[in-house]
Length: 288
Image (cartoon, rainbow, N blue to C red; front, top):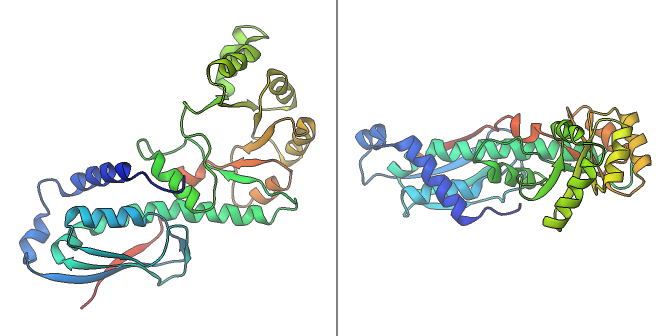
């Protein structure tokens, strides 16, 4: 996901500003004259990959269309500490009122993009010719999945399925229920999905090599190798032999991802990209 739908931005910014401003910014409206103007800039306080600037621009222009926002870098750019990412010029009230909401979006999304980039860099060090892609997951903030997956893409990652509607994924709890239905149930489920959703990817989770064989027999074109050691992953990749895509998943960290990437898997999914990314520090500074 390399762009954010304009209608999504509009609705999200409207909701965020309503949450923060409510009936009005009583501090700014009381302290700052309506005709006062200001110049400001937003600066990165640490090295990072930037993401969220379209939302920053939308925040200020929704508050007051006369605020001029000049974006100085692009989402996905790597910047140094002290880099100015945008400038603002216009009514001081609007600039002050929008500050926190704009920074919240920018800090959260840049944190996701930065962490994703760190994983991508580690994967590039793997001792395989074709490097696996870093995937996100559905472990996202409810209602903000589009936003957080956009940030993953800005950091160089690849988006996994958006939701339950665009791919079949048989996970461990599905297997528990299917096991009650008999040995043919897994294959029957795949057949049903292929009939009703012919373009959907068929992903089946496997905890061990026996389950890998079951997934292949059922017709999976993508096998999620859950919580396997690097040695187990290598065995699984050999067993699959290119008959399906392979994905390592479960507890992947920056200090383990290079070894995982060196096993020959096609993908590595990392829930931490969206559920544990640290916000990047940005600030807005007004010029004297």
